[in-house]
Image 1 (cartoon, rainbow, N blue to C red):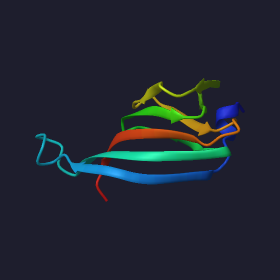
Image 2 (image 1 turned 180 degrees about the vertical axis):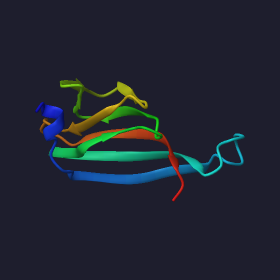
Image 3 (image 1 turned 135 degrees about the vertical axis):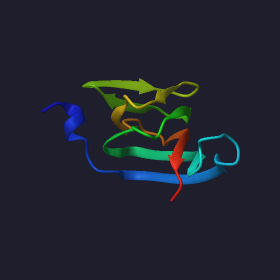
Length: 114
């Protein structure tokens, strides 16, 4: 079993919804979908898990503060302020903050409306 498969449950994470747009009226074929922007804060020692995928939920992430470790495909990669990553249908991962300050990201994705 690799490190990705043993991802702990979510802890030390807060999520603030910043904005949404109903994509149905905006783009033909997008009924029932919305574009969503969130601010995610992961406290030191926090985990955004368990392991999850982005099938049917593509997005991008941009780091504002701190360092977030992204675990995918058995590789742990650190991202700091000013960089980010895509989350497409091939993304299966979990995140953690191994640092000593809160890590803050902006996450933008397309989701099915509840």
